[in-house]
Image 1 (spheres, rainbow, N blue to C red):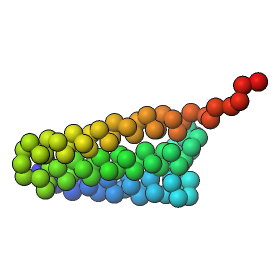
Image 2 (image 1 turned 45 degrees about the vertical axis):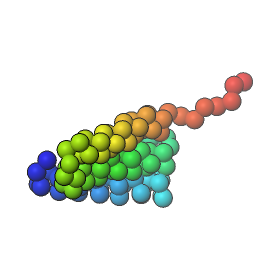
Image 3 (image 1 turned 90 degrees about the vertical axis):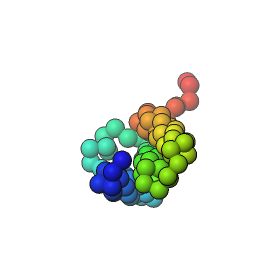
Length: 100
């Protein structure tokens, strides 16, 4: 990953993190997301996980020199980002109601 891609992904990670913090603290979502998301706090935590995974990818590419260690750090970032789609799916589902 060259420097331009790293900076772009880093800025994207900051934007996603800012939106995640807004969703967790205030429940605010982008207008396109409001119709689908039932649990904004959970969605915000998923966004924070995506931002952490992207930041881990940037750190691995730009700061870790050893190729083997770089692979481990990138895998850790990928593992973090793979948890987020499940949380996003759960944030879109309505809460369970008691059986009648």
